[in-house]
Image (cartoon, rainbow, N blue to C red; front, side, top):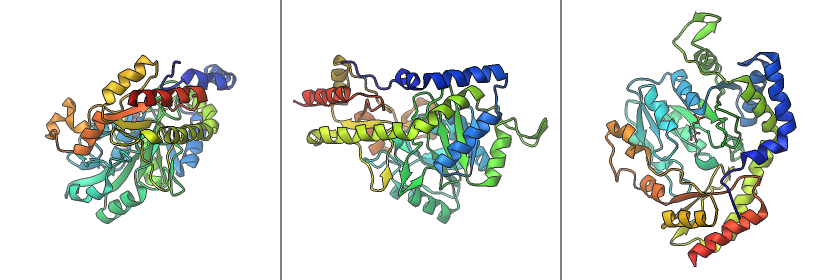
Length: 369
Ligand SMILES: *Cc1c(COP(=O)(O)O)cnc(C)c1O
């Protein structure tokens, strides 16, 4: 039985009539950038995530870059972040001329180990940039407390966690900004690139609006050097069609995760660890990520049984060639390095059938015999 890691076709077919009509309407209108649909999406997503303002941008990476710039972070400033994430997080910090400063992870959640953050603060530290990895929020309460006490900015990379909550609070309630990606495979995916910055701060929102459209204050008046980073209307109407179904899709992922937890509980032990979920955390399982001491063998075994899986992420940021100039070396972040060798994400997509999921669980048992 074939089990893919995601099935974007099934998701499209369920909404095909609505999405096709909305895309055709954009083409017929002749208005492709910004406009009323993009504004509606900004309002709806901001409300969904608990923020006052949303600014659509061209990608999740741009959402991070524009957040850093809007918070006044630039050359020589230190930004504390995680070494275990998609490359865009570190890249955004480097692109604005700031210096990524890494802190090791919590082995159970794969998120920043907040107990190690204060040791990493120096007089040059300006911000903390945590990632809500695999759909589980980093500890907002502890992070915002540290930021308040040290006068730092908090920028949440929530590219993987739209719809998650922590102690009942959605992703964008705390922090200076919270960033989203609409990359097609994200929980809320567009049909191309797209992203959004969420904030509760009116001034930051105004700066973001100016920054994402060439630094304009009004038409052809440039009050700062900005970017060309807009969300196009075709993406906005696709996202508007999908947004009302996001909670249900996330709930399917959560149901699938609960089933895996049950079906795989007996395998959990010295070789295999199931993903951890903290108390009070409403995890939306962008990925369901196991750790296994024989990870590469396991991945080949699953492939032989036509089950797709993927390693998110095989090499931590501090060991990437592009960031060698930061001067880190192997052994600096032992948990991140161990996790990179052990993690494997298995299929958890909302449209997965019961039979497919049972087959994945059985195949994992077969491997462990
Ligand atoms: C996807 C992702 C991004 C970047 O988003 P793009 O839209 O691809 O630019 C940033 N951070 C994390 C954690 C991501 O998963």
